[in-house]
Length: 68
Image (cartoon, rainbow, N blue to C red):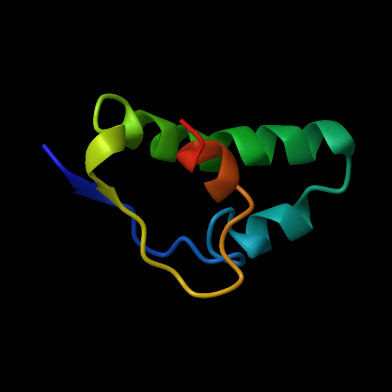
């Protein structure tokens, strides 16, 4: 099985519009978790077969996701 994570650009993942709505630190943490969760789930078990297209700057999530 292989997957492609699309739209891994900085303003798309996490979605900039959602981040702008979170004023409190706890709200931002919750937004980051809900934005990151689907990506984590998609990558479980297929880390060796993942294509991650995007433009510069890439998502802040990418270094952690691609580290292992």
